[in-house]
Image 1 (cartoon, helix red, strand yellow):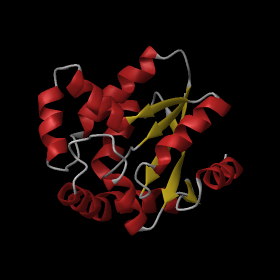
Image 2: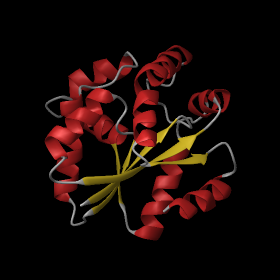
Image 3: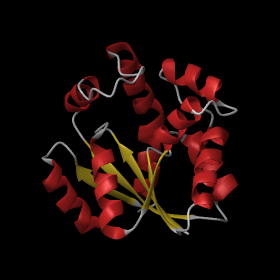
Length: 182
């Protein structure tokens, strides 16, 4: 099984790119955030806990997220995945390696980099009706990103497994730049 992970400061920009990549290259797109929201919606065993954590703008415990990803991967008939929004911190990274390290190889992280002001604007104007799309929660998410996610991005960079795209550009330009990195 091969996986590519996407990390993004271009919040919401990566989703359209993942869909395009999945369609064109046959990846199964798994969004960590979507799996978490589905667990809430479907009233899964961890749904209430996940909802409370997300409302606070915090990161869900890694074993829960990795478990949801593993279940989705097992339910798929594919061995080619694009995992969106994961890992977000060192605990996510370590938990993935512990629980999935012998089952899946992360080939690289595809990092969609974007100016903070553009990211915040995208979140606050995406009109998805998400409860965590408020200015206060976005600020907490940005703080969490700076303290928890940036070190993971740097880890992938040091390991030579980071591929970066400027996602502040128009969608088609971002996709063309992404394709060059595959």
